[in-house]
Each structure stands twice: as structure tokens, then as C-alpha cells.
Length: 273
Image (tube, rainbow, N blue to C red; front, side, top):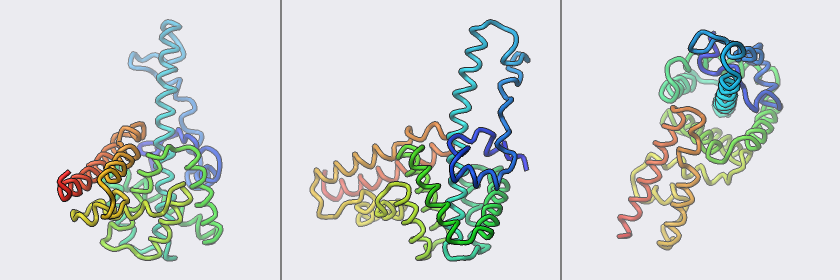
């Protein structure tokens, strides 16, 4: 499996901690990939650490360092997504064919065809590790992994991660109570009030009652409270705050941002604001 095509060699913050331990079991020698990439030829066919001026050498290395940091952020996000997806899928103690098909469709829609095969293989390895650990021990790893994620991702990135998981849970047209409980656990471990899920579950609805849930307020809220709630949501979910994670993730956040704006517009229209 050419894993580097989707989750590359720069693992960012998951090179350590509970996520790093799980990645080591699931991805094996992936930690060794990428260490020698500063010696790969540049566009002129010259290695980055030979030839050319000293200024060009440092420019190449600075560019490589920034690229590696961004790749590390993205790969940490993607691997975290797969680990937490495994927790959601197995929340009821079993893995259904329909759930795996939902995951494949989700990966295809959000990250492209190459993610389907590779993501499927990774998550099956995670399931194997879960069986070996036992359900309680695995949940402990998930909890500690969420704490690790909360320490390294900004709130917008964590919200996008949780949003993907909520989308995955409802992708088959229904949300099992065990999935809801698992999502509430994840929300709290990631540092959010579990009520944020009410907003995520109502994003794709088009009635005014759901719009209030999207903004996390009551229909009895004042106009000033509506405006304040929208400003808070817009700041938290702005797609620019996840831009370093890659264009596919930014576009998903942009779609969610539009749905938040649509909810605001429905409320404004009803109130004549």
C-alpha cells in the first residue's frame, strides 16, 4: 500500500503519545519515511543540500521545513480522524458492512479515491488492535488520544474533526444511540460542550427551528443574542482556520460555513432583521 500518497511520512504531533503508539502498531515503518527527503533533487535536478548558493540552500530548507510542518498537521488530522472513526463505527460492539461502505463513501467524497483503499486498510488494522486491547483499554486510548489532539489542534481544527465524525455517524440515514453516546464522549474529551453536536446534526436541515439549533440558541433569544451567537459560530468555523490542513478539508469547512450562514439568514428573514 503506497501509504505516502495520502498519509505521508511527516506525522506531526502523533509521532508521540497514545496516538503515536497506535500509529506505530498500525502503520509500522511509516515513522522512518521522509527523514531523507531534504536530500531529494529540486526542480533543477540538484539535491537541496548541495550546489547553488548558501542563500538558496537555506531557502530550500526553510521551504521544506514549512512544508513538512503543514504535512505533519494534515497527517495528524487524517490519522486522528481514522482512529476516532473506528471508535464511532464500533460503538455498538460490531462492524457492519453498511458502516464500512458508509466510511468508504465518506472518504471518497471528502478526500478522493486514493483515500478509500488506504483508509480502509488503516481502519481495519485499528479494529484488529482494538480486538487485541479489549474494548475498555481501547476506549482509554481514545480518551487519551483526544486529550493529545486537544493539546495540539486549534479549536477550529477540532471542530472540523468532530464535524466529520458527526457526518459519518448520520451518513446512513440514521444515528444509533450508541453512536450518539460515543460522539458525546468525543466532544467532551476534545474540549467541547456535548451540545455542539445538536448544531452539527441540524446543519443540513432547512427549517427555522433547526436553524436555531445550528446557532445553539433558543427561538426566544433576543436579536442581539442571535447576532452574538452567529458571530461566535462564524469565528469558530471559518474555513481559513483549517486551511493548513489541505484544500479538501478547507472546502468541507467552507460548506459547513455556508450552512451556518444559511441558518442565520433563515432566522434573520423570519425576524425581519
